Image (cartoon, rainbow, N blue to C red; front, side, top):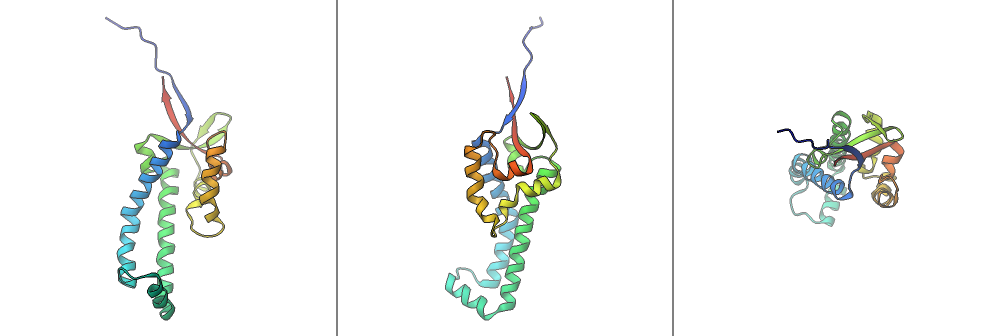
Length: 170
């Protein structure tokens, strides 16, 4: 007996905010485990564990070579974090968090048409990850823009002409 059921209809829409937030939090856990966890051991060896702010400040003032090494380590950490987001979004259209929540990063090709995001689009959309002026202002501006934008995009997504989407099945 064959059932004559209607076919499932699939359409694409903006990813729901809770999925985006949970995917980002999951990505932060991945980064914490693989990147920050490793470098935490390195910085603790350089500075000592449990050192307070003033003792660390004094140590770095007295040892400029150690301060420069620490700056280099932080630069490597920033580049690795940026590479995680940029390379995964460029190569797969998803980070690990996005994969688990089935959301995708795509480029806007036309009105309601999407394609694969380019490398520089992925770089631009992730500039908020750089903890330096002027990018640090994006930590406030990007989420606010996301909440109030009609298309559900962050400011850097709008500038890079990318979107985060999910597939809905009816």
